[in-house]
Amino acid sequence: MNNLQIIIVAASIILAVLALLIFAGILPGFKTAPPGKAGEVNFWGTIPQEVLNPALADFSQRHQSLKVNYRQFKEKTYIGELVDALAAGKGPDVFILPQEQIVKQKDKILAIDPQIYPLRTFRDNFLDLAEIYVSAGAILGLPLQVDPLVLYWNRDLLANAGLARMPAFWDEFPDAVQKLKIVDGQKIKQAGLAMGEFGNIENAKDILAMLMLQTGNKITDPETLKPVFSERGNGPLSPAEEALLFFAGFADPRKDTFSWSLAMPEALEAFSSGSLAMHIGYASDLEKILAKNPHLNFNLREVPQIRGGRVQATFARSWALAVSRQSKNTAAALTLIFDLTSYDQQKLLAQNSLKPPVLRSLLAEKPQEAAFEIFYEAAIRSRAWLDPDPAATRIIWQDAAKAALTGAKNLNQAADEAARKFSTLIPSSD
Image (cartoon, rainbow, N blue to C red; front, side, top):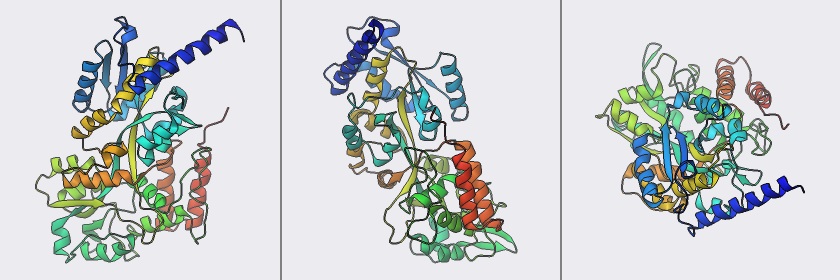
């Protein structure tokens, strides 16, 4: 081992011990750190400043010699600006990592060594969905927020249709949507449930993923990223075939489940206007619905499940805190992400957002608001998958759903073709 290697190893050990002391609470910040860049952390993300401010203010009060510079970006441009900045060597020390970007941005992340944050502690602290942030035994990011899919339903429309309760299982939906649907000739004036199309259902890809995950199967292998959704188990259909069959049926005029068409407005707009009885949306959609129509008489519950299914699950989006490989303030960056995912800070974030917390300890506490109780329960059951390329996989699923709807391909062909296309997206291991 040459002198340079000895220095690198020694520095790595010192950094690991320092971060461990910070995490354990033995070293309370950087009170002896000199002012300037050594005591600054540049932090980028899409969470609104007003949501983060209470947590960041509390952090700054307890770590007075460590300055955090948070920069908020628009969701549509965030990843592009982040990647460009990192490529130019001008990126942040800490950045918010959306789960759909784990695969694409993995090479930009400084993984947290299990000796600094043991995997057992990670799994004990965070909800099950957090497992997607673990790669090759190391942690790519600490979960910060989760946004699960839930079911919104219009109380007036269900009462008008004579439905006393919301369906709890998917096999109850064909009858329910028939009672809720109102047609004028070939035109749907009132829809029961938004499913079957991609063009006017923003969450279509995630709804399909949810249907597959509810079978208890994975979509991609977490280690190899190989698509496994088209593999058959003991049943006659693969998870993808089951999901495509059920999903497409709601947009197929030839079927009794027909309840949605491209002539309808976008799903969230349709629900907010009162022309859609049931909408599968995110917890964060609550604020959007109230803003669009504060007088809408609606309620919400967890998404329906497969009757007799092995698991009860929903799909969720999540965001984690990741440390950049380029950071020159790694110890300070780790201090920040450990702190923002602590119990008190997670509680502050949950109070300032419609998104439930990611810590098991907080999810075990029953919130006062009824809606938040649903969000917490959904978060506990949340699942996700490693997406090799979010834009490309949406197109793949859209093509598969269209083929299943139009009959251009049978279910087996549509699922197998989707799997072949997924395989081309797997990053090279070089």
